[in-house]
Image (tube, rainbow, N blue to C red; front, side, top):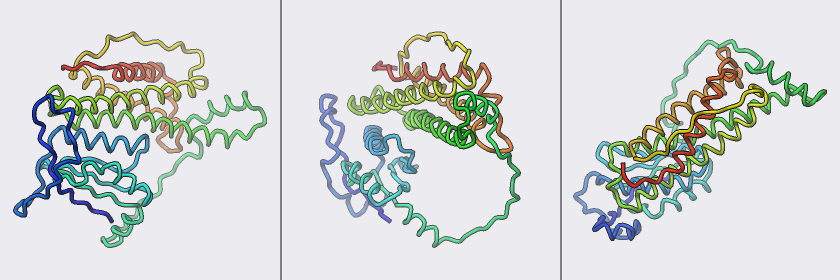
Length: 308
């Protein structure tokens, strides 16, 4: 296990004209011996760490998170697949690796399992759930693939298609979750007052995830519509551009809510469970929602206002 206690102070923000020159690797002075708790991190530092973490995570939904303690310090912790990925995270976080307001605890899966072995094990017995043996949308998928590929391996095709669709839906949702996290993380910070370069990074992360969400959602919609709603002409009313941080926060909250509902509908249709159903994915409301959230992501990606 790697546990890094970051021991350098971040430089002061100084005057507005100095903000663009902030160097996270500077002033690596160990805290005085009397320091018993890590100092509180500034909003700018939290943006910086989130930005570095966002870059190394890319589109991978790895179990590495950034949290703020009650005392205000930051903590980066989680589990990655290999030593190579752990090293990649540490290299990416190098600019803040000696900052006393940030602590890093990144482990490999093997290290995490070893840690668990040292803890007491609790065994629970749970009655097995009776489940169906086909996905809820099997009838629609079977009809579609039999028409388009007569004599083909329909069962295998349905399994592969269902797995691919559920995975793509989750990849789409991932970006909505990341946007929600970014907004929630700084919900109590007026982002108009932070250093300009920190605000730029914050917006860049939102733009990145919004654009990725729009692209993933469009691909997902185009893949499932021919099967479940081929005759539907999708249209939603155009909405005005987002013009403030407050409107941005509401837009991200709305996108997150719609994305969760859309993902639930897709999972219900394409997974095997006693609770599964294809009803939602065939509804007009679902198709309006999947297009509406796509347009909403585009508006978020285009947001550039400097005041809220």
